[in-house]
Length: 90
Image (cartoon, rainbow, N blue to C red):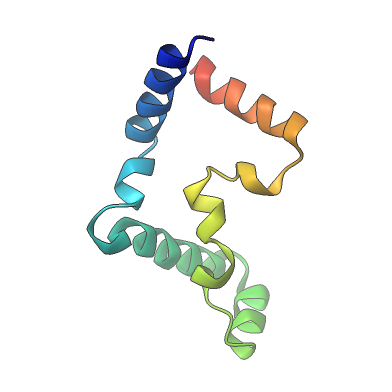
């Protein structure tokens, strides 16, 4: 893919998936994602939520990279290619 086209794809992903907003306004949207994650864990995985609370482990301590990279930073590269392919096929 030519460099210019790759940049256009990056911009589209940043806008379509709200990644751009995660970096704006002192990371307000990112903090909102942390709040949502913690509420979902509290509702759906109460034991894990309580365990994390007992350890004083907050979402920003482990989930920043998840949201800022669309979860691709924690997977093997071959799996990342599949994730990005799925995003681009939408």
